[in-house]
Image (cartoon, rainbow, N blue to C red; front, side, top):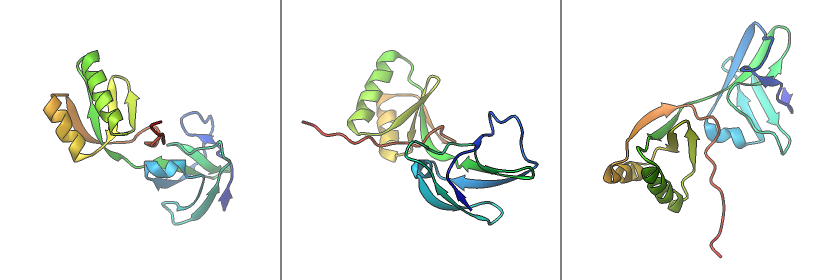
Length: 148
């Protein structure tokens, strides 16, 4: 089966099929437009999305009256950073930016992929943080740039 369009997302679907098969992906696989994957029932699926499409947790790849195939993102090993002030947020954001480390913000928390050097930096700076396994809403993206 080749999937070229995302049907929808389970969070917003009005009607669901009674049988669900899941495809478990690492968060960095969400940005791949063309890939092969296997459901938890052993069925192979090919995905070939358009340039503007990107996978997300809960996306429905296929659905008929009886069956549906849904993306489930595996939890990432992350550092959840909870600065106590705007100054602390700015300082740590500057430090992480200098390392070109992608971050995501959820509420008052900054989330980065786990790195023992970043954990040591946070400890040195006294920034509250904890290591966790979390589903991230989107993949961590390194943005290319150059210093002119």
